[in-house]
Image 1 (tube, rainbow, N blue to C red):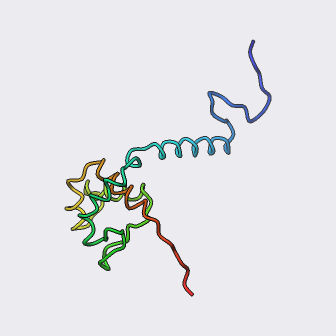
Image 2 (cartoon, rainbow, N blue to C red):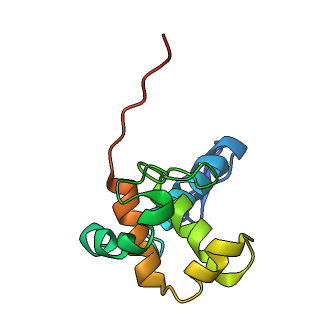
Image 3 (tube, helix red, strand yellow):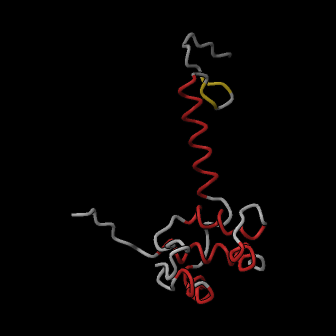
Length: 127
């Protein structure tokens, strides 16, 4: 027995056929793949130990000690993983960071990102 639908929003092959439905489906798949992607399963404890090498510029607490170094405390993990990976691979250029990140493994990058991403910061508006 074959099912015939007269609805314009018929689902074929498990995917919605309407434009909005396709957008929602795509967003759901992208979210699922990002959430399970490599680099977001780091060990914050191991990252804290490795962050000793970062503390001169970025501080062990993730608060920058130098005006040209950004704060890392509370930064989102995916951003930190992306930035460190790009510094390591040379696609993102910074004289110091390219040298520092070059020997890092994917696991070490994930751990550092997990540590700095786990630091909670409070943002207070001025005045």
